[in-house]
Amino acid sequence: MVADHLPNAVGGLPDATPQRPTTSMPYPAVHDMPPPRATTVLTDAETKKLESDLVAARNRAAEAAARSAGDDDKP
Image (cartoon, rainbow, N blue to C red; front, side, top):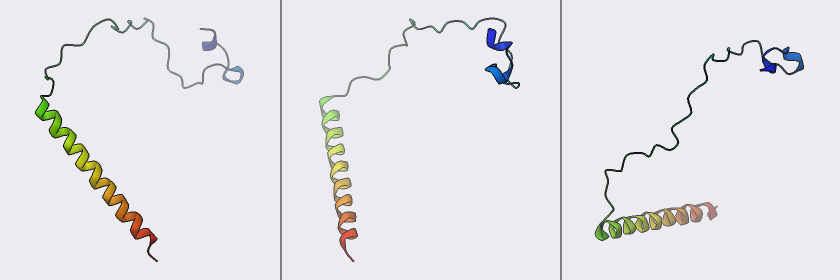
């Protein structure tokens, strides 16, 4: 590369820059597909339980935020 031979003051590489590798790196395997997942799709009962757990967590967070907002209003 041209920048390898230019001084640092005119846009070259800094003095402490490591040398470039002599061989190019192989291209990543972009077309290799990952192995199939071992997990299965949730059942209807599991989905409903998770949804109710999320709703309960959301309601608890909203109540805690409302309580802390109410505490901030008090002198």
